[in-house]
Length: 207
Image (cartoon, rainbow, N blue to C red; front, side, top):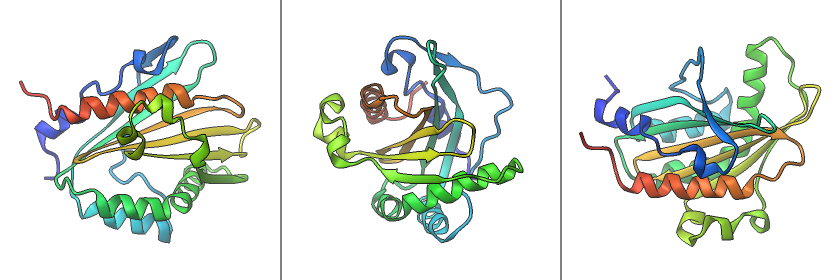
């Protein structure tokens, strides 16, 4: 059995709260949400990330936390994973090398699962000059975060997804924020990453 109860409690702990994202955010229930032990679509890039990830051995998973901003319905969803192996170097290096192709294939696969032909989709790394370093507040926080942007033209309106991973040793926190084109969420997301990393460093909860 891959599931470890103590690690599951850690994954479900409140690593991120609405106040971390700023004013106007509230927790929303994830109704009928099905957790996916494998979060990726098909393809060579996804297979490479999948292989590197599998070597660390997943021990806990939570996809039940989400937040919505009241004034514009922007949605943020967290995926929290805990691994047996704290050494994240190979996993992260593989992700950094293959993330764009991996996310592109994954987004397309999710549309196809709904019998919708995907439109133009592109995943790109946030440019170094655009990273909110002042909002991160600490160079170590900045260096612990991988940030990609997925632009999706499938629907009637262009959707943008901020795909932000905080690498915390055994714990791996991915925040995906969906919004319309032209909205700048770099400050709130950087604040969220700083909070997640600080709480993750405290380690698993003790009861």
